[in-house]
Length: 421
Image 1 (spheres, one colour):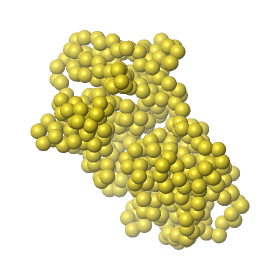
Image 2 (cartoon, rainbow, N blue to C red; image 1 turned 180 degrees about the vertical axis):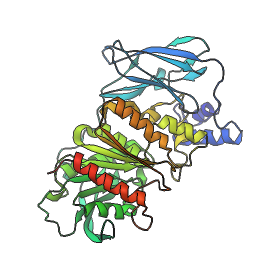
Image 3 (cartoon, one colour; image 1 turned 60 degrees about the vertical axis):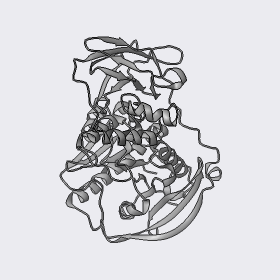
Image 4 (cartoon, helix red, strand yellow; image 1 turned 45 degrees about the vertical axis):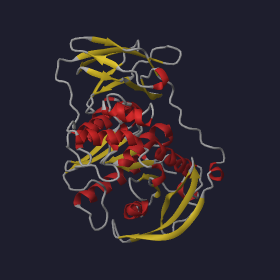
């Protein structure tokens, strides 16, 4: 009711701002966390098809409770699904399939098509139509089109894994109405600029400067490190950040950062919020990445929202209202599905999952969900689960024994799965 009122105040489709207002109102009125019906459950059936009406087998269909808890099913050879055990209420089904974009069931004016679930009753949904996933086309002559430019050059030092220095070049470019000035390239100091190195592609969750010790440490291990971090202009729009990162990746592979960066497929690394960015990049970049590492990352945005509403996690600024900003997951499941790689795990490259059991920002259950989904899809998976207070890969004053071991495990994984020029 409150969310519907907020939506009317700002237009037909709720905005992140109206969603947050509704969250604050419901908190003030004492209706948070969201209440889920305890009546006997019902079921939902339907079919997933393409634009020509042909069935799509192997699609994952999701409906989520108001608190985020997901209920899922896979489509059979005829594209049909049946989801059992759904609490009574109203839901918008959403689906994704290999090679297809995420899609929620919509009706008139693109508004959510709500399915009412009743106890002991099977509800049939209209067909859910998926379209092939097609990321935005990048411009020709990319470096020129985005006005790639060098903004500074300097050196950075590290005392781990040993005392050494890296040469750093900072870049900026213009894309999709914003200036992305958070690109850094790290090379071992004095490296021959014509000699290509294996590439590590770092997508950091906070300003790239904060991660300079990490980037430098990997550079002195004889990697070319291309790093990028979110810019303020994109806010918490992980899809927009992912497209920025895709431009950086394409520039690197086109040689725009110099011959030392190489043109082979890199290994990518992200953590926390940037794991959501990286998950979208994996969909957009396709086979342009040889593997990825997720550190303290998001795997299932539905269960993360459930943890948030249950008070099991504490999201730091500026992400503390990210789950409410997406809207009620039972009505607007699409953003949650987009940031849930567990449901498109079959498209993942070789995967390394790192997580601490002490993580209070993103529970280790996220990592275990992703591991199970990737293994079930036949994706090569390696894990490093540890007991520590760190949510991230800390190098420098906060270095721990687990952090040292984590670093070398990533280096080993990168050398085995990253492509050598």
